[in-house]
Length: 233
Image (cartoon, rainbow, N blue to C red; front, side, top):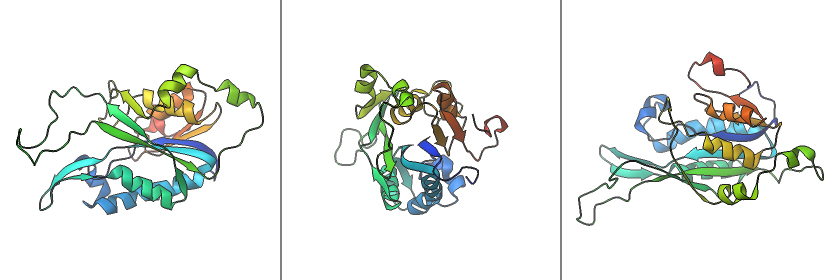
C-alpha cells in the first residue's frame, strides 16, 4: 500500500480471507495453515506501517473447520494465529468481540447421531480481534471533533458488550461480506470524524461506504478489479 503515508491511518477494519476455507485455496496457493497465515502477515506488516500511534486494528476472523485427506476433521484456530502474529508485530491485543452469527440452519450438529464420543460442537460465532499500535492515542482537552463523535450510553452498553448477535449481510454479493452493522459500530467506537479508515481486503467496499457515511475518510484495497472502488472515498 505504497500510496499511503506512514502513520496516516487511524483505524483498520477488515475481514481477510480465512485460512483453511476451501474457496480461498487458489488464492493462498498452498494448503498449509501456517503458510496461509504467513501470506496474510505481509498485509499486517503494511498495516502496522500506515497505522498511527494509538491507532486501532479490528480484524473479523473465524476459525475454520475442515476435513483433509489423511488428517480428518479439524478446527484450525485462525483467531489464535492472527493474535500471535499481531503480538509479534508489537501490537497490544485488546479484549476481542464474539460475533454470534444468526443462522437459519435447523440442525448444525456434526457427528454420529446421539452416540458418543465422535460428535463435534457446532460453530456459531466468529471473532472480531482488536489491537492497538503503541500507547493510547492523545487528544487536546475538550477536543471538539472528539466530542462531536461521541456515541450514546445505550449504544455504548450494546457495542462494548463482548458478545454481539448480528445477522449476516443482506443482499450480499459474496458470502464473505460482513453486514454494515459491523463496520458501523467499529468505526464509531474506535475513530472520530475526519479520521482515515483503511480496509485492506475491501471486497465490495462496505467499510469504505460506511466510513464516508460517518464522516470519515475511507481507503480500500482488493485484488478483484472493481474500478469504482479503486479510489479514496
